[in-house]
Image (cartoon, rainbow, N blue to C red; front, side):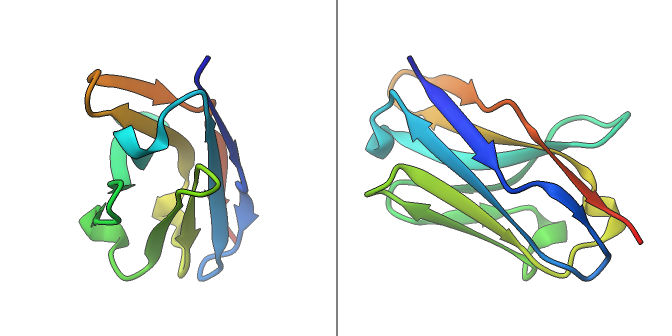
Length: 117
């Protein structure tokens, strides 16, 4: 059974930092592209960042230079370091694992990130 367990959300002031982590189990980690999506109230879910098994990463334009996605294959985890947070980063953040061979997506339960003074 595939499980993606997220942690690290919370409330932070503008300009602050948060680190989101996602631990994956039940999958072959080298077969998946790992990513973080977010969904703000009234908006569609959007891809924030993703990273392949070889470490190549993609970032949403609005988070480039502020967010860093890393992957620890030995621990089957990914971490999203979010710096210089803005109120517009407020959303529920979801961990995603895309199995490139089975073409299947797995999702975490979501973690709330709120940026507010």
